Length: 300
Image 1 (cartoon, rainbow, N blue to C red):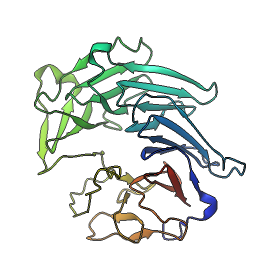
Image 2: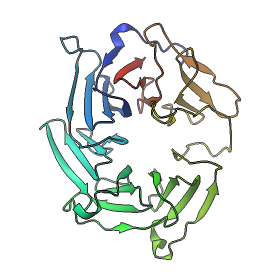
Image 3: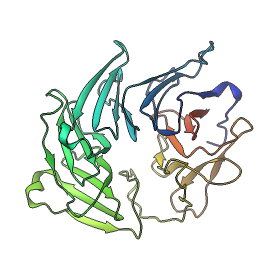
């Protein structure tokens, strides 16, 4: 991890505005970065392509910001995006077609969507700012899915995450600082299996591959101009993750469970801004960071 570097060749402006989410394609040969911004643009960057665009293109696929995106876990030719405009969409990279996967009824479009998590090839969990989670069958009509009011006391579910192996479980975090584990077989009871409380809003949550309990202080006061920090696990390791940083040296931090400070600071002369949004390649040691002007930095 200490050998990862960023150069001018691995820096590019990919989207017009502040980056809100990113995902690296799982390809084992090419570095392809997908980027979403606060205006609803999807950016695609072929990191090793040299042309007049630096290998980067963007086009607007949503009417508002994109807080969540992922490469389809069962079809790597599709990118799934969820937007504050009340829709979840899938972009087919081969056909260059954008399809609606889920959309709020017109009368509920003000109930903005916040996150999605893929359960299997057909099922998607989509969370909303009203405290509900929708189970979306991607084979059905975009407006046919029904919502489950999992968190009636919450004004907003920030993130929903499906368990990677025990698919009957998912976890949510909300604006009240609550982290709740849900059993999909018992949703009629409207109560979580368990609940943990943080003193402030819980803006992100992930299932950890490591069962060790660990807590550390981290400066997450990004303010209104930077995207909220969300950590991402390093590939092939159960004890390490990366996260954005407000360190004035302009770094991306690599943490290892059990420590009280970052074990590695990813930095370089080519990165001169805060990269508050980060993501890792799912199987290779490649890390990407995105800033508030639409520029991306890739360490490899």
